[in-house]
Length: 193
Image 1: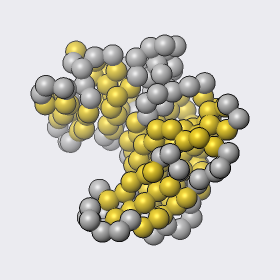
Image 2: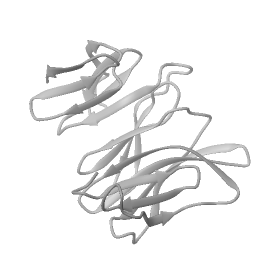
Image 3: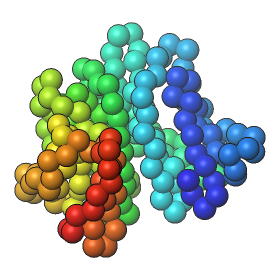
Image 4: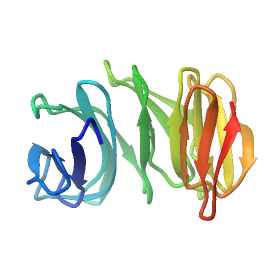
């Protein structure tokens, strides 16, 4: 949601829509559909001028992850990063002023994608057949994420390995200036940063 504008992705077709309210007609912002491709899973993030989405795309048996950007008025749709991936079953994304943070693979790999250049850096390597990353949040200094019934934190440049904040089956996480908020299947809790 962005100041009474809602964004949604019809991931099976690769189409991004906006709505000014939940009952208003959908407006097509970008269409990346391809009759040769199968699409699976997607994640959205926004900033002041653009909408970003990561989308899994399979063509001739090979999966790739495309990270795309479009202006909020629907102009200038483009791929800013793309990489091959063996398989995945869950995708989450968050952003700060300069970068997107995308987790796409089984095993909780997390990639930082620079908004301006599309340059990618792997912050958390894939743990083969490891747990998925279920939630991501970022503040000015740190990246927060949930995997394998743990809430973890690390510098957002990846310079130090993740540290444990809590043992909890976290499904959602967000941050403000002072706290990390997390939701499990049964409760919501907050932790000081």
